[in-house]
Image (cartoon, rainbow, N blue to C red; front, side, top):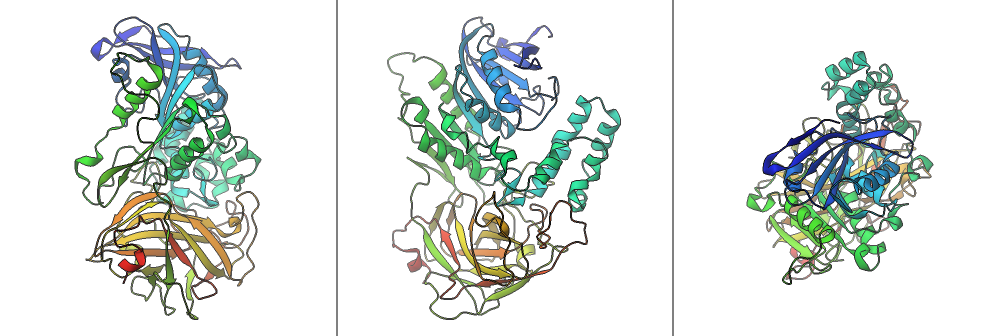
Length: 593
């Protein structure tokens, strides 16, 4: 451990403070203390990305929190940077989190109460620790993090989040793993090739991905590929299996275009539903117009003005003050339950709203898919209609060719926007393709707010025994510019269960229910609502080979072209379920003419 240094505001810093875990492995932390000695609550962040950085590209520097009366502990996770041991993502964090919370509560100048903060992986370290019930842990602020490590982190609807998972492994994990192992040759090679995207996304087979196989670094990546269903490997670390054990107040923070948007909302709703009375029932949610690197709006989207400014540090500090500091003065008014549970940003109108719960309303409006059999591309005749089909309507047919996948254009991803498409994006390059079905409403006669989780019920058939369905909600302005609002993905064999896949019967009409990511968006008067339906989204998603065989071991030439048929007739009413707030005029159908 190095000596104590002094930061701004007189904050005192001790580097590389050791803590022994239950198995004897030593993890190291930087500890920031206020200028004046005393007894203070502790704020703990556990990160795999270097404690010296302390996620300060998103949050205020730890000294900012220390100056407000906290001992701030930033720890390198096991096997990362200054900490000993071997890194095995997610799987080690529950026990290490418990042990670290209890250790931090006994540090000099700690008053014994601990709160945790951090986003992304550092959100996972909070929730996994909280489920172990360390007595000293009083509250958490998990931000931009998943609700499950299979569905919503590595995969979505059974489809591998290729751009996120591969670039995250290569760029953010593998180089440091090699350095930690003192394998300088591997570290040099990984560093030199870590920017070879997007080319690396096309390398096949994935289970022989050379940069990792030949260096022997990050073996966990191949475990994730091997376990391509939600089996015991994932259940053993799953949050859904742990929600009942998380009984501390949590302030959940997320972004509408984050890869973990659905997980953030799920963590809030599940804990709010299960946590019960008292402090455990105090769950709060903030959802903003942000991509994964927090508090950053999508630059190509509508101007958001001052309303998107980073308010998170202030909200987070107030949360910690509430749960970690005793009331001061008779005028203090921060009793649990006196503030709205949910704050969310409505994109399009660019304003914040509050609600007592999520979703803020249960209204869902069906918009039915329709065409004369030529919904292919934005030049086709696909329509969204308020009325259900009353006739035999010709189905729409397109080709899914895994060797020529539909390119990603924005969306929910992580972590480097230069590598992994995310946020809002113009859909022109996608919607000119005939392997994308496009269904569009007539112009709206007044504004419509969509807040909640859109979904699609799709009646479709494929010539393949397995294939993917990608759906995307889009806003089209009066000039015809189309931007993505939300999307969802489903691998057909997981249509009934993520744990027990079931192949398709080729050519048989099958019902698929596809959830999109939660969102809040105002469709303005004169704009049109659009739905895209396709079967690939590359590189965001790993293209299905359409063969039913193991995806990860497929050679580049091992695939089948699938012929996809989407039905929207009286017997097969494919429909977009839009969580639209009722308008002053009543039904959304009225606004569509």
